[in-house]
Length: 283
Image (cartoon, rainbow, N blue to C red; front, side, top):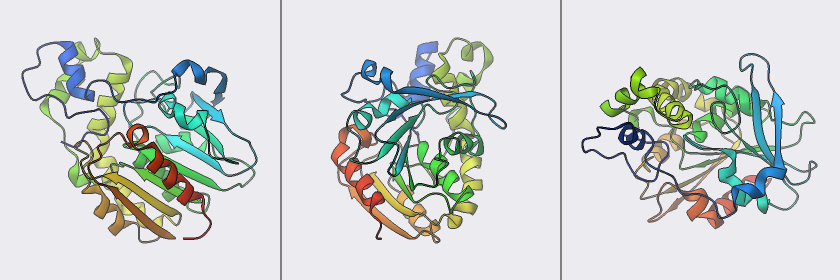
């Protein structure tokens, strides 16, 4: 099963408790940034959105509101605070926003919004109105979210950075334990972040199938970064992306030998280099 976030695949043994289901659904606690969450409090902002979201989105903001805007999109589960290291030291001259995706962190709604179109609408709400260049970075399930944005508004996105991104629907599946986690009596005992992550993952395959048809519409520069030992989102996603992104201005791929799924935290230098590549004008 392709897991979009979590440090290890779910355990295949007997899971007889709500905690066991939770760990199976999202793979225990993921790796995280060095910068403490408290350090991001002064960076917090929010925006009210109309249909189709009709909710309040929370995000973190750093850097000057003059240069290109970089929007960081987390996977599932996750939150904007996972990007704390990048907000603490943003690229020079770049405005950085990190979104709490709908259903996570401090963004509404309470329940999940598994539609990639709805998630993409949340990202579009953060696009600058002044026409500045925009780079979108998506990690894990955040990858198809930013790809959906770039396919929907191809002329508005300058570059995409796809970090350990889950885009190939053929690599998606649902384990029986996820159905247990979705069963109402069990679901009621699970924390919001786990409930919503499980809902997103169970709905992901048909969402990716629909997105696959639109990937050729992406005209942005694309930078792909993936670890060869990613056992949650297999590196086999990379040739799928390369084959489908036929309309991209250019596609640059870097594979990291021996690296796993948690590149934003254990390969920060490489992620920052991918961002720098995306910001370059030339292909």
